[in-house]
Image (tube, rainbow, N blue to C red; front, top):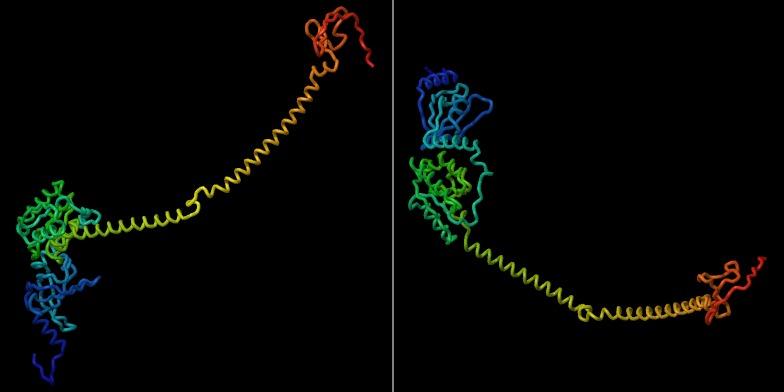
Length: 406
């Protein structure tokens, strides 16, 4: 394509020629790290930025939504293998790569598989916070699953012994990486869970690569831990390592050392806290005793308590005065009653038959003892008795003279 300052080629022709030349290249599989994922809602075409894993070289990938979804859950930082074909955008003249297939590669592939497994188990409810069991304050026996003579075992044992010297551990050594590790870990978990004296189980391992920690994201191990009746503490790797075991365990410890701190209390700290509590209780008792002593002294200082009988003097005087008044009232009432009784006796005596007889009257009675109070009650020749004041007379009626009524 000849060109000169006097006869330059149109830009569109140059871009078209470049596009034609570039697109003659065959598709190729490339590996790189996704550093940016631009998802555009409602658009078929999606854009990714891929960078070389070693060099500062990055390109733009265009792909379809179907290809992106088929690759599974991808995050920025994932290493992928992409089947790409270079192309040139006519409007901008920029070089881009059309991605026709995308797969997670290396750790990215493992991460994608772990993420998919994690979502499946989460959908089943294995990570529900409501299922988490509380750790005992002071376990009778602590189960520990770890590698033989590992740094994780040393960290857990030393820190537990330092914090609570009387703690008892039940250690089970297993493989902590490799294909055979999962079966040994499951057997150890189930064995410790069957021991009634084991109150908590720690699964501990030091740091390692993603491949090294794969057993702790195994579905079978996760389900075995989920089925445990004993609380399980996951202490795998460093704080940045998050195997699926961390999600199903009742407690996640950032490191084996952290697990030791979570499982047993610090004896020194607890003794200090108890001493402080005893001191506060003692001080509270002393304060209360002092308060009650002052209140008692105030009560004792009152006149009524210094001389309890003093408050009775006024009542005693009032009682004596009332007693005198009552006695006088009784005597006056008795005099009145005696006087009235004397008058009544005199009236009764003045009205009695004997008083009448003493005045010269007599009481007549017939032979049957009936009173003769009218002349009609007797007859001539009848025997009657006359009762006088000093005796009686036996009389015979010789004459009856009725008195005419006026």
